[in-house]
Image (cartoon, rainbow, N blue to C red; front, side, top):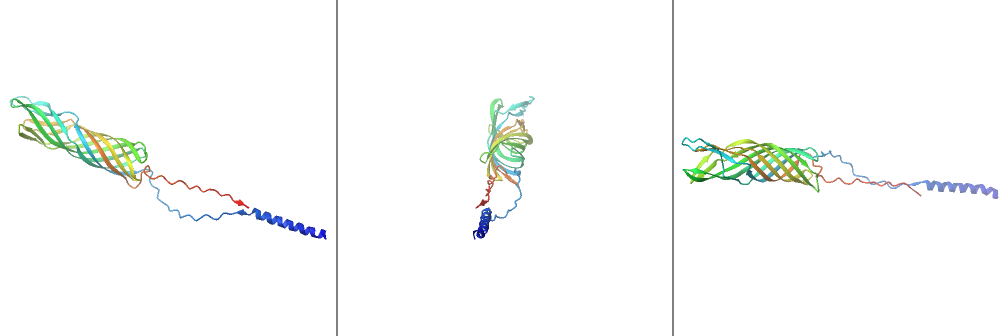
Length: 285
């Protein structure tokens, strides 16, 4: 009987061992991941701002770059006296508005063309001489306005917490318009008609912009402009014409720059961190 049951017991042990091995070899399969939202395709945006438009306002104050000269005609057969100079010359401050269009080449360089209108700045000066054989002093009053057209280039010096300092330079032309000059001596006023002409202009800029949004910058800065000399007033009653030697112009400026059809990558919010999916190895039981 023992010989009969031993094969049966061996078969049962082999079957049990095979079942246990098969069960132990079955891997543990984790549940499927949750479905992800569909991917929405977005058109890629320009890395840099590309084209931009700008608008500016400023307050400026001016100084004459040299003498205001004029010619006098003493009469009585005496020759004219050239290069008489104003004893005093004072230009007051005024405001201006401007607009421009430019291109952001890369993170470090941009260029634009700007046109500014300078509102009238009052002028007051004086001359000294001899009137009827006695010393006399005149009071001279006028005003100056101008259009300034510049081609500018800037170097941006990096962005720090949304603030980008920069330096720049520009070259162009200024259309200078003098009002009539009112020359008053001893209660008598003589009108010299004002002159207007185109002059060479050059500028240096320093400032900083601040990211208001990813395509709008607030720009605040200082600009120094040098305008060359030209005609100031015409001849009238024994004196003229007059000529100025140009101006030093100091401007405190503020404005906005809007990037057209793109965005400034330096102003864009940082991209979200990449999602890291941990690998879960199969678990065998």
